[in-house]
Image (cartoon, rainbow, N blue to C red; front, side):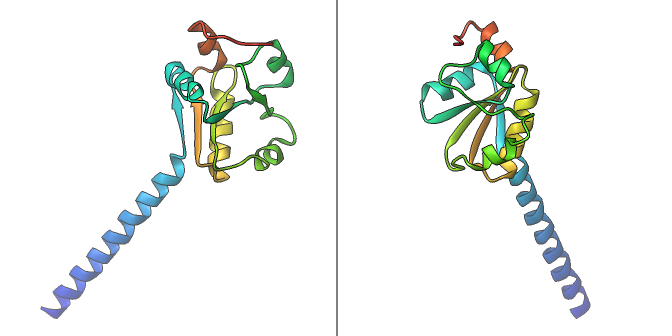
Length: 135
């Protein structure tokens, strides 16, 4: 009888620790989200975030979202530039098609940024919907 109780307690303890561990892992991998153009525009319209273009300076000069700042993800100092940003602020991140910005968003989340959203389809999707860009 005592042996069965010890086994039950051990199994319950193991299950509890496994469950807690899995929950903590999922929180750390879901620190940013990829959203549609409409949701991205809504976030920008709230004017509570910083719009971050992670394309090259040349791409940025060809046209970017109004009010965006540019930090090139392929630049040698990308990590250093990101580390200078306020991690508690909201960031709307985009690139040309969404791949580089997804990578940048994941890097930011790994560095402890609280709220990061990635534009699905990048500036190409933004322009396809007829939203403005500036030079």
